[in-house]
Image (cartoon, rainbow, N blue to C red):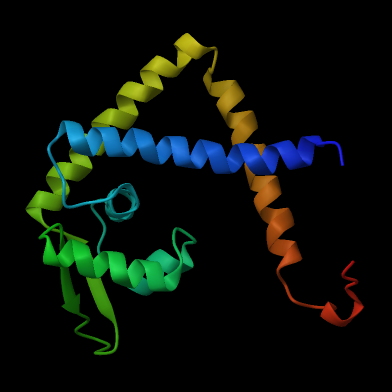
Length: 158
């Protein structure tokens, strides 16, 4: 089977994601942060200055549930996140960044701001990035439509 644009896109998305995590890892190494992996750093970044539940992180589509729980636990152990039971719902656990976590958030924010300034050197202006974002959102919607699990009995497997 010859590769199609769709097939190429699937492989490219995987490669770009891995490359991005390499960039985050370099930033962690540069800041001498050995106790966080890139995925944990991105969870931390996405929490930012908010106070949210672990469930909200999952619902926002950032991460898979079991991975979030494990990674939040590790970040609590390493003092990047503060975890507290909700006052209103004792079943719910709220998370926010500790001072150490906020410091790392600021470093990552500065890295992304630096990258945003530098992307122009690679002919990646705001318009091209906006077009890319729209394409990725459309792919996400397509894949979401494929996971509704309706009509499974009509699927044919070769």
